[in-house]
Image (tube, rainbow, N blue to C red):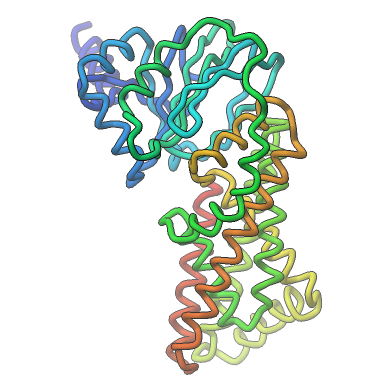
Length: 368
């Protein structure tokens, strides 16, 4: 009996994660939370996550957070894009370092706007009632991050009418997309763009397909929740296979003539015969990669989260589309600019072929 108890204790410890003065229970799904909870969503290597986690060592913050059942979820492992929630009135949220309130009712899919995201709510009867969310840690200069977080953890009573939907933030979505092109999260997209360019495919058409897919999948996740997860897996699988084929085509020169001819026929069917549509569909199949990687830039993150909660899918599509276009424009400029300084040659084809195969394996791995 003692051995059984020891195993259970060790298992519980394995699922616990110490951050600052607090102990969180690690979960693989947001639906594993119970009671009045605080769910901290993060990713390894996220600089803003580290900034927020520094507050967990503060006594006042730790005391307030201890009132909740604490959970943590690694977004890079969970591979989720949204959480199905019930909203019945006021939701507290952080916008540019200010705690605001939004009033909405109904069943919704809360689209996770990036990391770090903190969700507070009540899990009861298998349903999650959302009370508030915090995203990012990029408060403006002069704003005390701790003060804002303390206010968020102690939301006020219901605010009459709530705040207006922040449509003005849509105007900055394109600029924020450009800025996000230089973050580690976009490295897979840069890799795909490089492979596309050096494989002599139409980079603008591939990027356009990725942008439209990204926006469409984001809206679909917000509209129907987990039901779209299977479609995203199909997109990732198709894109991964296409990258493997492109890599094989670039690397096949030293292989047998028969194998080279077979790969060439596949390339001809998949890309040349389909022409522009082939390049567009290739990009469309990879757009889903961006969906769980929406970066928590203040106003943009608020638009994404509030649009998903309000069921305003047109505003959500516009935000994701503008953000994606900005990101694609920056990626295009970077790849074309770097290409000017790289002379052609067999070594370039081999290097890009290896990159393509690695990217294909990575995307297929996301399907597992």
